[in-house]
Image 1 (cartoon, rainbow, N blue to C red):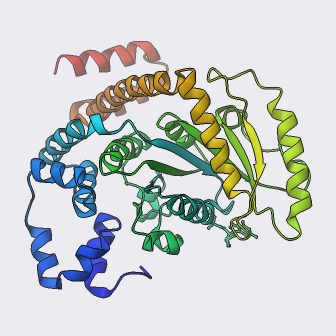
Image 2: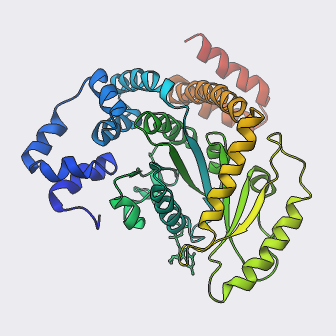
Image 3: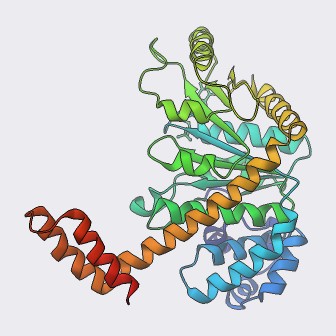
Length: 362
Ligand code: GDP
């Protein structure tokens, strides 16, 4: 934590970037007191609605908790915050490690706060469970933005499954919006399934790429291209400029082959550099054009409604699965039945039926 002093680092580590004003004026003892006292759901709600970052961080910690009492308290807070989550734009940013996501978010976020916006940065990083520390949304990687009083950066939640991590991030969006953040950026790595999860919680999905050795489209998953509302060829500076422009032409050509989007939006390809800041403004201009189009044709609202339903179904599936696989009898039966299926003593369907019957009779 390069930007924290030793007195405050413990608190800000646990609770995201806590309000600098509060942390600067409180003594270490007072902070300890603050940590011990458990504010009620009502206190946290009014704190969040007043834009208090400490309340926001505490409520997100409740969302991330596995304690059943915390879950109930978190749900009360989320429900109270829901009506305030309308006036915002949620932007998903994905790209492989090293493509320049955090540098881009730093430059883009700083540009946005310069326009008077309030920017929250959240992350979906399922690998953080394995590596015991999240890389995405890491505050030390966004040194300028972290000091900006109009920005809030929260590292990825950890959890056993992508679904769990994604749910926590999605619920945190609601709280950030209620706390007055009008622009919410969700960062994720371009490997595995996490892009799909992030795509289903944002209004605009941005794919970061860098120009390669020529065959730009090689190795890129079709599904990700299809999800993108914009592709930004990053690091378009110095010797890379010509290559980035060539990549832009190639991506543009490839995008024409995809079917038209329900939004009525034609995905854009742009180049940008977080070093020279060239292209940053254009990315925002593109997003505002998208906002205008999808507000006018009502797609923005319809998509959010669909996403709400999607997350309800996802949560049901996630919790059913968790409950099933954590059931000790099922765990025992699963081992036995897997063996029986492997040895052709039982058909896969018969084995599944036995397990499900056991579970539902529990
Ligand atoms: P992430 O893993 O996708 O978050 O990537 P980082 O933001 O950590 O950037 C990876 C490396 O690329 C770092 O060494 C950055 O300094 C460098 N980088 C990021 N953005 C740019 C850019 O716009 N231009 C250049 N030349 N380098 C960049």
